Image (tube, rainbow, N blue to C red; front, side, top):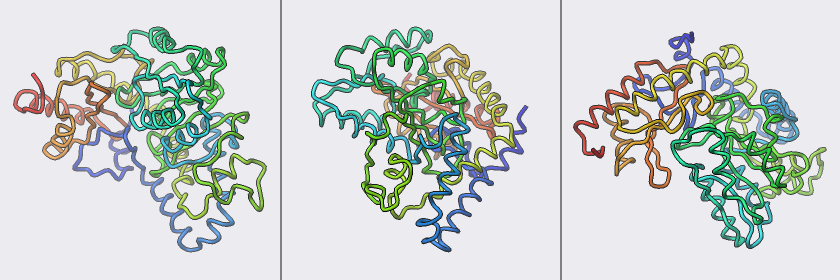
Length: 391
C-alpha cells in the first residue's frame, strides 16, 4: 500500500485545504519544483547563454526523456504550454474547406470545442459533436455511437482519451484504427493521460496527440507536448512565426525549428520533465496510481447514492482512472463550487457539460480516505440544508 503520509510531505499543497482537484492543474512534488526553480535561476544568471546557446540541447534532453516515457521518437515531439495551444496549431493548419467536417464527441473539453468551432466556422466547415449516451454501457457502444457521426464529408476525427468533465476513459486505440481504415486524420486530446494511465504512442497510432505533463506527470505548470507523425509535420506551421522560419542555422527538423525557436520565453517548465519522471520512478508511481484508482472506484457508488444519481460507466479500470464524475442536480454549479471551498475548505470542481452538471473528484498519492469522507459529509449537509442543491 502507498505510504500516503510520506507522499503528502513531498507536496507543497496547502495543508488546510482538502485537495480533490488534481485533474485541473496537477501539483508539483518538492523535488520537481526545486528543479524548476533551479532552471529559472540559471536563466536569470545568464539569459543569453540559457536561451540562445543552451536551449536546444536542454530541450532535446527533456524531449528524449519524455519520448522514452511515452514510446515515440523525440523528434516527433515539441513542447507547448498547454493542450489548447497544441490543438490551435493543428486546427489552424488543417486547410479546412467549406463542407468539411471534423468528427468529435459531445464529451470534449469546452476550450477545444470553442477552438474547433472557431476554425470550422471561419472555413465554412462543421464541427460534429456526436452524442455519446450516458451512462455508457460498454466500449463497443461508445464506438458504435461515435461512428454514427461519420459521412463522406468527414476529414478528421478529434477525441479525448480521458474526458475532462465526465472523467471517462474512451477507446481511442480502436477508434484510431477504424479512422485510419477510412483514410481520416486522427487527432487525440490526451491532456489527462501522461502519468495517469500508461501511454504508448506506438500502440495508439494517433497521427496527432497532445498531452499535459503538468497534470498527472506533476511537472511545473505550463508544460505540455504536441506529437505529430513525421508525414504530417511539414503541414504544422507555428502559431508564432519567429526565428525558426528560414532559420539562419536550421536543424535537421523544420518541425522543431518552427515550434522551438520562438525568441524570449521561459521554458524552464519544459525542462522539469526528466525530474518528474525520476520522481515517479523512485516512488513506484504506477503502484500509487493503482491505489488511487481503487479509491476512486470504491467511493463512486456511495456518492452517486447520496446525490440520487448513477455512475456514468461500469465501475472498472476500463473506464475510470484516478478521477470520476458524479451527476448532480444544481442550478448554480459555480456557487456550489465556491461554497465547498470557502465554507468547507474543499477544492473540487463542479463542472458543466452542456446541460449536465458533474461533481468531479480526483485522487493522487497524498489523498486519504478521510478526504473523500469530508467531501461526502459536506455534500450530505448541503443536500439536506442548502438551497444550492435541487431536491
